[in-house]
Image 1 (cartoon, one colour):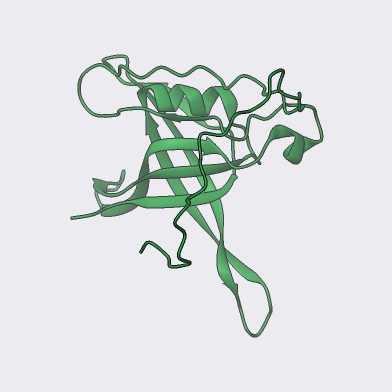
Image 2: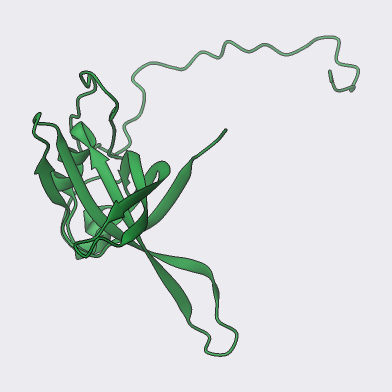
Amino acid sequence: MLNRIILMGRLTRDPELRRTQSGAAVASFTLAVDRDFADKSTGTRATDFIDIVAWRGTAEFVSKYFTKGRMAVVEGRLQIRDWQDRDGNKRRSAEVVADNVRFGESRRDSDGGSYGNRSTGSYGGSHGGGNNSNSYAPAAPQNNSYSAPSAPVVSEFAELSDDDGELPF
């Protein structure tokens, strides 16, 4: 069976970081995700508001680096929870349990500030039982300037001498 979801949207509020009784970090937030199609009568796109839950290292990463309005790419699985409200009524909620959260844009794109090339930063942590051996180190800003090679480049490719013009496949 396959239960895999990939979403891209903007956070509707700052992530809320809490701890379980055993000390595990859990962050919850909501993504506003635009639908791919527009309503024929109004020409506007509908937006879905999807609840996201992240555990352990992923939760700490999200709460540290994401704020309201930031674009995020979330990979995870859909989870349906049954629960009772204060009046004893049975309720059901759908949420995405995030396995991996990435920046959907660089900070420069979102707020005009200088942020470097951090749009590839992500954290994919384990939220199952046991210790999480993954650790997150923010991506270092990359130097995108070009510098010419100091020595001539020698190609390891050679011309074929018996080329009959036919493709090898």
